[in-house]
Length: 165
Image (cartoon, rainbow, N blue to C red; front, side):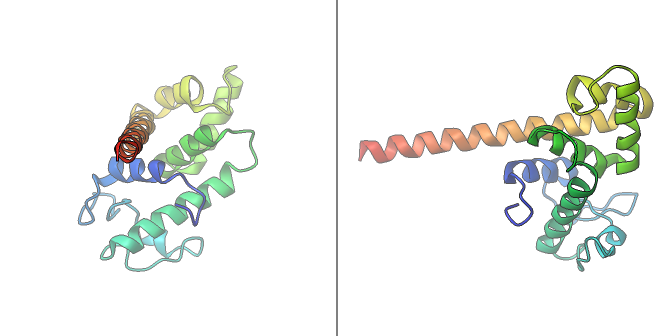
């Protein structure tokens, strides 16, 4: 996460959505591992990471590097806040960057904000490609906020314990 400037909670949420953290998972589309990345995507010159099917560390590295590629190539020059930038990046990880670019254009043509996923571009996604990507991004954010809340609770508990000592 730190190497590619991601909040680790977001990466964990995406990994949980993709595979429930199961490295042995394989999809019908050929995606493998915790991050459910295709070996062909991992082998692409923009990622260039091997052994994604057998090594959890390599799989997470490849998935994270691919997410960074998507973010930096397709969503870096837009006026997006960090959460929307990740929402679009995650949507592109799921549905492909060309599809998300089209949905943003459709949102703008329909007087919706093309720089906001929730309550804007997600409506175009649901209308044009169905609910899968919409639910995918929503689940990631649900897990993200849960992980953040759990971490905050644990930190508060630790502070209380240390204060009591």
